[in-house]
Amino acid sequence: MTYRYANKLPLNDTHHDIEVNVLECIETTKLKTKNKTHGKYFCWITDLLLDEKTVKLIAKGGRARWKIENETFNTLKNQGYQFEHNFGHGNKNLSTVFAYLMFIAFLIDQIQQYCCKYFKAALKQLGSRVNLWFRLRAAFFTFLIDSWDELFTLLENNFAIKASTIIGINTT
Image 1 (cartoon, helix red, strand yellow):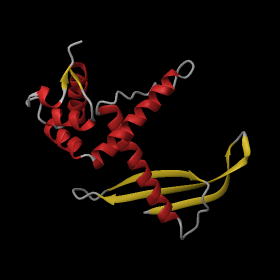
Image 2 (cartoon, helix red, strand yellow; image 1 turned 45 degrees about the vertical axis):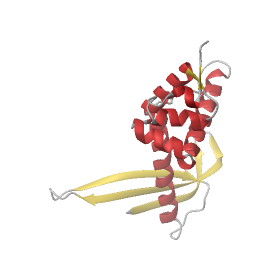
Image 3 (cartoon, helix red, strand yellow; image 1 turned 180 degrees about the horizontal axis):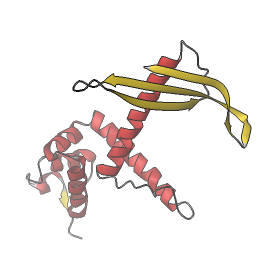
Image 4 (cartoon, helix red, strand yellow; image 1 turned 30 degrees about the vertical axis):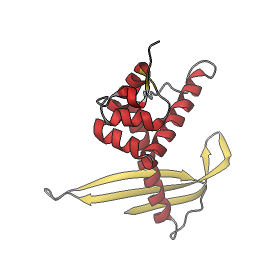
């Protein structure tokens, strides 16, 4: 790894009064099949003071943060949350509210995935979040559901158990 850094640089040409610190990291790996190298370039702007002692730790933190953000947005886009780039753009506040609601749903799902044995079992049975959300919506259209435990038990058993024994059938 090669690190380059500078402290107290102006943010841009129009804001000389705002100072930032810049850290560059170049990761070079030697290719096995050829006598060549491959480099990855990373760059961060921070308000943390950079010096020889801190650059490795700050670069490691920056890479970890990028990984978490990237994985989270990939989950929100590709695993049934319907997150699109246009959330947060548009007239008034509606799309921002939708984005906030989606983040709250994601937070609740993360808590459920960590703490709820029924959620874990249903997700394992159905194989993917996309399938879980599809079946969850189907359950809400079909049954009156009194608790999360009832919902996830129904999903875990793939609607195979006698539904009327755990929940009332919605006849409306």
